[in-house]
Image 1 (cartoon, rainbow, N blue to C red):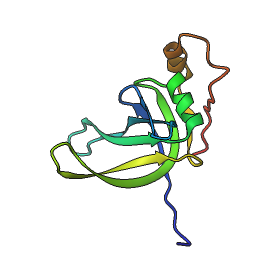
Image 2 (cartoon, rainbow, N blue to C red):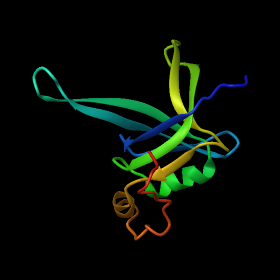
Image 3 (spheres, rainbow, N blue to C red):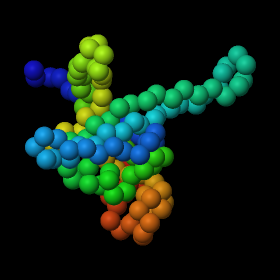
Length: 139
């Protein structure tokens, strides 16, 4: 299908530690939830309002999975690029379910750790030289 695009760009914080598991072929995959949000001032009451959106992230790119395993924990701020994907499955009770998630495929997607301090303390070492880090995202 020419002329279409499926690309998601998110900046947010991990809601819990990433979960790493193995595919039947032995390759690693990781998944985690990512929180994004917005804050605004209500025009009528003047009070601060906020809204959080939760995104399910799944990563099949083994190099990125290794980075996630080594440096990323609950609360880490990341920038990521992936694609939306919807899949279905049958749960334990036999009910058909669907989920939409952001997927970083084997050869597509990008992840940048935005807060090296949390990554350093999570690894217990001075990892700043090893972390792909970007403070200047061109927006």
